[in-house]
View 1 (cartoon, rainbow, N blue to C red):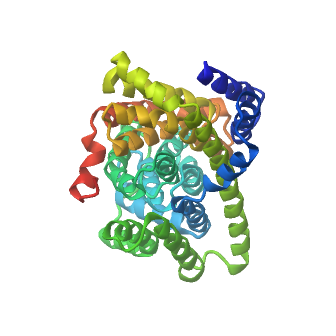
View 2 (view 1 turned 60 degrees about the horizontal axis):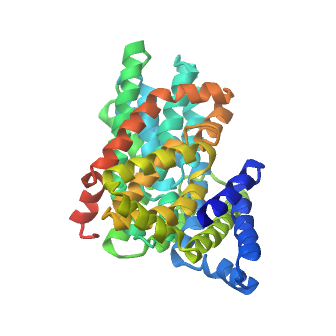
Length: 427
């Protein structure tokens, strides 16, 4: 009954059109002040202690690094390199888009940023070369989801903070699944292009490929810097985020020189605004998690599911359905911060590995990025292409089906995500 009251309050506030972050906070305050004797001081204290975790500092730094890279010409050079490698296959620019999204995902940590950076360049180029607008939009909106699966990933940091999991192990666990999903999306793109005889680029010689690689190498080195630094123990994921922000600033302003110094304050302000928004959501979600724990809801739910005999297979299927439905009406940050404190104890009670569970949750968030009405990638792609939301959504269907197949693969084949961190001794 307590859980029904809490979630009923939350749902009722959200149905009024209230932002999720405010709905979370008001739900907690309404329940605590009308149905409990919890002193107001404890609420204020929880607001501050809830976001004092060191890992949370990684979020604004990764956002800042992504903004420097988006505005600093890194995306354009990665696209040129990707086109030189795979552009001669059927649907050349489409394959280049998938490859470029995977590369940019490995330095940005954000799906909408990946769609904006790659899509703003490649969608007009694909239309100019003779591709249907739908094909270009579907390819990039879907492949942009790699931004939260291939590390570094802001969503993975959110999950780690919510469940006290290892950020480093999550990052390493996302590498192989990210590569496999990029390959599956690439095959889907190639198959559609081959069936419809879409144009392809002229095969580039190795000299052209080398020059494209050399021009993009400063951006690609960020992948080595972040992941190599975390694995070698040179710095923590949070320190890696700070290093990546400084590195992105240096290559955007002083190496590539695509960003004049006078634009830096604007980028800093945009990053601060986005960081403040996310931290505000986190703060209210921490309060919500505190309320659930105070009422012992996660522990009771875990015990009920264990006693019901649902088992790990049934539980994982139920979680996928729940998260896919939630992805239709909420953005990833809110979903993770609301559901992780409830679902994580159940997963642990059923013997599911926390890192495998985290990667599965992130893949669900990827799919949510291209499902209406709150699919962030859909909004970005729609803004670039000037297509309506309905048409943009339909354009993503072939790749959405591929991602659903991949979700089943990652859910019931834990080794796909756990093999690399186990091999590297991180589990």
